[in-house]
Length: 148
Image (cartoon, rainbow, N blue to C red; front, top):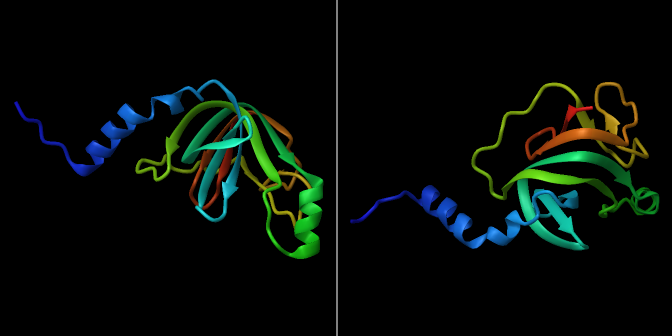
């Protein structure tokens, strides 16, 4: 018996078969940042980038900005990795992800080293350091608080 599958189905099947070790990161505490070169999120576990993803769901979240890195950005006008979202990895969709969820219209978190020294709620510009649950979606707005 032969089964025909399309290319998208083949890639999903291949990911399922070959990427079992990546599933080991679910439930682990990870750090992530937005990778400006790859235009996606880089997930770090124990100091190493282990996954690139277009969608990430985290719980028990901390927003962290390394002030030394921020000051260097301002001083040299050159970007560097100095801000992170840290939390327990609940779910992700590996880069490139074909089925991104739509963006919620509220509770958007943003960070701009030239304007803020921490992550902020986009609408109010109020600093935010922790959240219960966030979704990071690689579209126009990136970070959304789903549980405070």
